[in-house]
Image 1 (cartoon, one colour):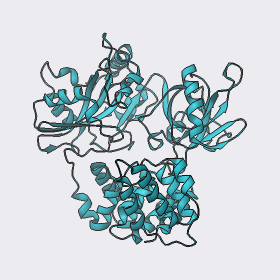
Image 2 (cartoon, rainbow, N blue to C red; image 1 turned 90 degrees about the horizontal axis):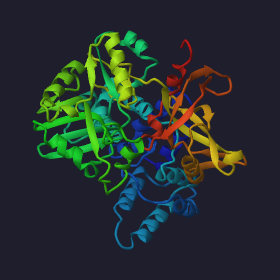
Image 3 (tube, helix red, strand yellow; image 1 turned 180 degrees about the vertical axis):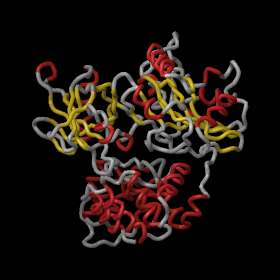
Image 4 (cartoon, helix red, strand yellow; image 1 turned 45 degrees about the vertical axis):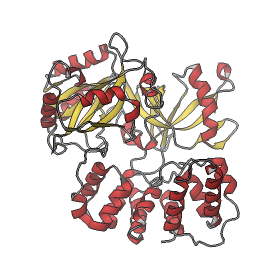
Length: 510
């Protein structure tokens, strides 16, 4: 397959807002790809490479993107092979060798192919092919049920591998994908709930109500003495969290897969600032003053038994048994099963009094499923919060003159298109945050204007808001009410942002 076919499909996907049309274009391409081409093609259409970050800067790439080939001649295998060689080039003199490899690749690429490569290698390939769209396309191309594809993806954690498995072996091969200790599972996520009373009315009495911490999601696998830790985005952080490794290694089991959160606590047992917790995931040298405490709320595997398909009630029974005993009791996420509405309110009050965000209400009959699927898990906070994509920023005035201040906020399009603008805010920003935005945003600018900048959709910010209102001003027909910045979320990508549907759910009477 020619590389130009991938570039053309990417352009077709980017040109439409229809989820169905996007999936159809991707499915057609996957159906024409050869066996060794499926993995790289899938990765590229999802905006990634099989080789991960390649360490080639935007300036180098744009400088080398000249003298394009007159007609397409690069194949998918040519490009994938070049990227593999690029990823493996290290050591003394590697910078020059890497630049030579890029130049050689670009020399054989057409102008359209060069532009695609620049965006792909810098992580700026925004074409609206989110995971859900690609998964739909895989199912169509392979002629297999979407639910089977999604389950295999949850268990493998890899879109390219899921595509290759589906197209090579169909339903049988996908159903043979099982949880493997040492390979992270896509995490199950909670949807925002409007209020505790509303969530309890929705899910009924057969629920558990647990604390919602202001921490970082972790998934921990143990196989004998080997313990490995991943974040919500499946980035391995084992070497940076030795205290978590030690605590899981002390549990009375041989193999286990645990799901939970971790955060740093102060001397009084209250949560430290979110930034303190996140500092442990971005440094090779842990700060000894920032000690992480784990709180586990789910158990997906224990001593050879997979628990994914068991109801949450069964998984919690197994977790309670594993964490029995005074030495391990503190590792369990606080919560109450089948509470009365009054007891559930007490759990929420207790979480807030302890300095946490709120609670998560979970249906006890629900199995484990990746992503915001359905409403089996719902989080309740006294103040509505959303994770939104920063689309732009305007220059401030008065005390904020010379600083990029008023930010444009976008919600994720549930149909796979680009983020949909739902409002602006300049509230909640400290002087330090304003300085950071002013320094950081120009590097992400896709357009610069006298009034400010439009950004590539890369940064996710958490905002608090009083609700939403109908508005013809924005394309989604809805606008935020009194939004204010809480913090940026370096642990989340635009694919993790809340959807336009989540904003619409906050409409009065919605």
